[in-house]
Image (cartoon, rainbow, N blue to C red):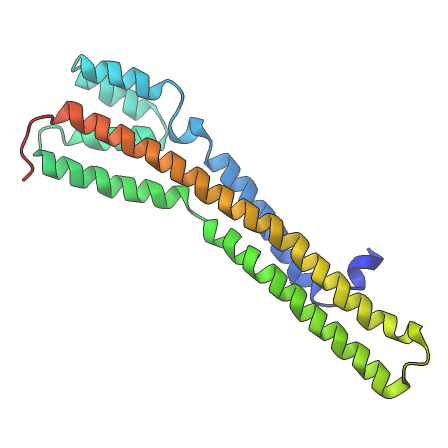
Length: 203
């Protein structure tokens, strides 16, 4: 605690940024589970049902699955009687919405990764100003008088990097995870489109 206090007032926003970043990362880990986006076995199940043209069962399976994959498939089945072009547009619209949901809050992690080192730099500058004020008023005869400003400069820098580096890694992980899941959803949409409207001319 003494070490944190020695970092000066800038440690408060750095601490807030660390809490926000951790909370967002944990929420994204929970939200980006495969079971919540593309459940295991779901694609295989609906693939077999669509192969048999059991559209009612496909619609029931999509409605039962509380997942992004279920919502995308459900939107395709609901427009089964429409031209291929309209079905494709609907799939793209729903896909964009689901992709945005998967990437939600990722900008918060990016912001934390960017701002934490800058806050640490601010603390560094602040600490150096304090140090030079002490030198100007008391000289450099007693090194202990300079310790406060130097400690503030170093501790705030360390704190900013300690928060910023993991936040950057978490941000990249969330984006990569979301991209992989979006690709899985796109594959499902193309699979459904191929079964629902294999030979229709786009309108």
